[in-house]
Each structure stands twice: as structure tokens, then as C-alpha cells.
Length: 66
Image 1 (cartoon, rainbow, N blue to C red):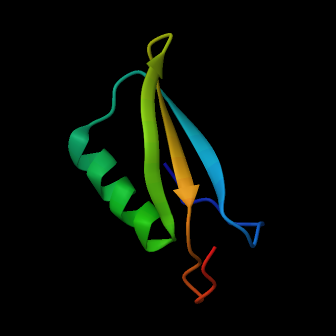
Image 2 (cartoon, rainbow, N blue to C red):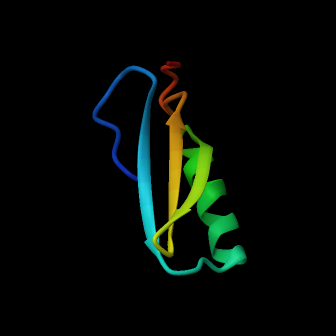
């Protein structure tokens, strides 16, 4: 899992798809990293055995708020 670069200045959503299961410790670390970059978890669901995560980008670490 990596933190995406944000090309958009306004509030928006991104998705990540993980094949198979997710280790809770790894996922918790990723959630905290994403939050530090201005993303918060909006939805999580399973589709065809994959975990789909939807993140809302609600603020930029450089001070811009969406």
C-alpha cells in the first residue's frame, strides 16, 4: 500500500483494491499514514474476494482544506 500523490486541489475520493485479506496491523498503519496525508477512510467493502477501500481526500498537509 502506498500513499497516493494528490493532483486535485478540491475534495475528492480515491479507491484502493487489495487482493485477498489484509493484516490488521498493516492496515491500521496504512490508515494512519493516509490520514496524515489528508485522506480518511470513507467505505470498505469486499468484491470477488478483494478488499475495496474508498478514501475521501478532505485536506492537504500543506494547509489547503477541501
